[in-house]
Amino acid sequence: MSLAVLASRALFGLQARPVQVEVHVGAGLPTFSLVGLPGAGVRESRERVRSAILSCGFEFPAGRITANLAPADLPKESGRFDLPIALGVLLASGQVADAQGRSPDVRHYVLAGELSLTGALVPADSALAIALAVARDDPDATLIMAPPAAGIAALVPGLRVLAASGLDQVVAHFAGLEPLPPAEPATLSGASGPVPCMADVRGQAAARRALEIAAAGGHSLIMTGPPGVGKSMLAQRMPGLLPPLSRWQALEVAAVQGLVSPLRALPVQPPFRAPHHGASMPALVGGGAHPRPGEISLAHHGVLFLDELPEFDRRALEALREPLETGTVTVARAAGSCHFPARFQLVAAMNPCPCGWLGHPRQSCRCPQERIARYRAQVSGPLLDRIDLHVNLAIEGAWHEAPAGESSVAIRTRVQAAHRVQLDRQGSLNARLDAPGLVAHGALDAPGRVLLARTVEAWGWSARATQRILRVARTLADLQGMPGIGVAQLAEAIQFRPDAGAPRPGR
Ligand SMILES: [Zn+2]
Image 1 (tube, rainbow, N blue to C red):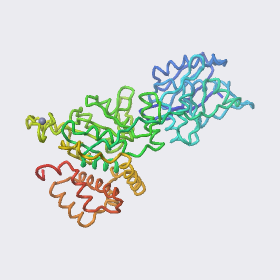
Image 2: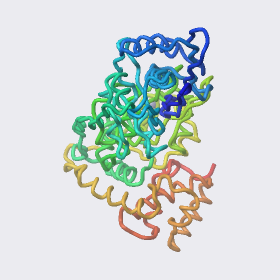
Image 3: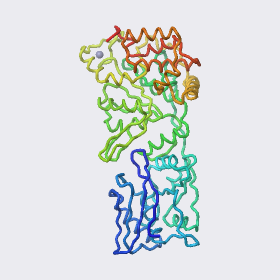
Image 4: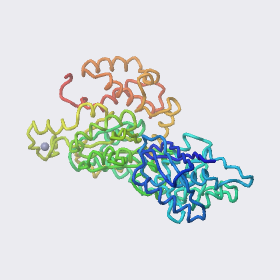
C-alpha cells in the first residue's frame, strides 16, 4: 500500500468535526510535506512523527511523503494528528501487516494523540468533546487514545475506546500481535459541593413561589428589589430545586468544562454560574482567537445568575437573546463561526434604582428621575420581554420572626413531578413550548379565555408576551397536576409580567 487513510477529529468550539488523514508515500527525493491548512502545531508534528517512528524501531521511508488533513478549510491547532499521521506513514510504507501479510482494516477507527520524540503518546485534550461527537456520528467507531484521556472518553455510554500508551502498541494492535486493552472508564468523584437549602430563606413568599415555578417549567426569572433583600440568596438555591443531571447532560456539561480546565469530576448537580457584572463580552458569551466557551455555556443545563443586571455590558446582554431562544450561542470568527451549547436557565436580579432604595419604607432614594430611567433602560425591552417571570421583592418588617421556609428537597419533589408530566406530554419543558405546542397543550377554560382577551387588550401585549404568560400558566397547572389551564393559573401567571405592577395600563 502506498496510500493510507485514517480518521481523526478537529475541535472547533465544542464540535469535534471529522478529519481525514491521508498519507501517501511515493518515489522521489526524500521529502515530508503536510498539507491542509496546518497550524504551527501541525508543522511541528512532522519532526515528532519522524522521531517517534525511528525511536520505535521502524524505518522512516526514504521517498516523497505527503500527508493531507482534509477538509482543508478546517483550522487544526493540535498535536492530536501525530498518531494518525505516524500510523499512516507506517501503513503506506508497508511496515504494518498482519500474519498473512495483509494491510490491516483501519476503517471505523478514530485516532487522536500527540507523540513525544520517543514514540510515547501524550493524552489528547478535550477527550470528552471528541468522544461525544464520535459516539453521536458513528456507532461502530472505535476510538484510540492515551490514558487518562481514554478513560474520560470511555465514560460515554456505548462508545468503544482502546487505550494506548505509545506508537509501538498501536502498531502491535493493527499487526494482530497484541490487541489494545479497552479503556477503563475514569473514576471521577461525582460529588458536588453542598447546595444551600431554601429552608434558610425566611419570608419572601412571592419570590419563593416564583423560584419554584421557574424550576418547574424551565422559565427565566428576574427579581427586582433593594440591596440585602435576599435576591442572591434565593438565586443560589435554584440548582437545589432542579432534578440531578442525567448521564448525557452530565457528560455535556463536563465536555464544556473540559474545554477550559482539566476534568476532575463528573457533575451531578446542574451548574450554577454567577459572573461579575464587569465580565467582558467573550467571558460571558464565549469567543477569543481559539474560541472558548463563555459563562453562558458553562451554565449549560444549569443556572446563569446575573446579579445587578443593568451594570452588565449592554452588548453582552443583547447577545443573550439568541441563546435564550435557541439554546446555543454562535461565536463568529474569521475562520468561520462556531457554536457552543448554552441551554441555561437565566436568573437575573436588579435594584429598583441606581442607589437601590426606591420604594423602601425607611430609606430615602435621591436618584433623579432621568437617572432611574437611564438605569432601567440599560436592560433592553426585547431582553426583558424574553424573561418569563418578573417578581418584586420588598424589605419585610418582621422577617426574622417568620417560620423557617420549606426545604429544597420538598420543593424539588414537586418540581420533578412537574418535569415528568411535561416531558411525557411534549418532550420538553414548558419554557420551550413553541406556538403549535401551546395550541395543543395550553387550552384555557372559558373564564380564562375571557380574562386573557381583556388583559391582552388592556395592556396591549404582543403575541410573544401572551405566549409567555400561557407557558407560565401551563407550568402552574402542571404543578397542580391539572390537564387544562384554569382561570386561577392564568391570573397568577399574569401577576409575574413586568407591567402587572406598573401604575397604568397601555403604552
Ligand atoms: Zn435610588
